[in-house]
Length: 105
Image (cartoon, rainbow, N blue to C red; front, side, top):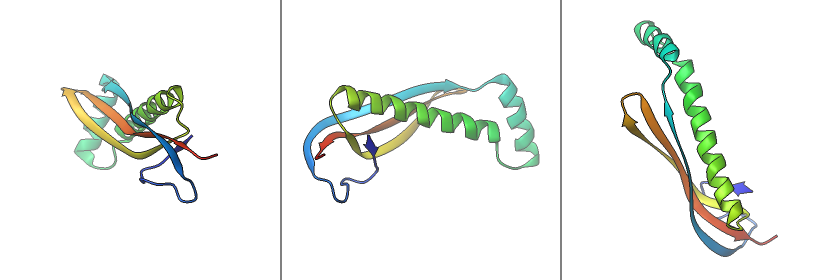
């Protein structure tokens, strides 16, 4: 499965546009990570635990989007974007979305 942020894939022709596909996950912070994050916030530096949490969330959303595209017969997704929304204090949704297409083989 080719997944790209571009609208086209050089050297490939889009034979069929299948439509919008998306994958989402909602993650909550962990109290242990909050304590570590609070300390880092006081002394400065990267909040490694939050960076890891967000990276895992993006990967899960991307995997879910890719699964939907495969189930609909796509072999590529173009125009991929990510967005995030705070659902409540300490919980956020990460959404990956794009256009599922079928490329020439």
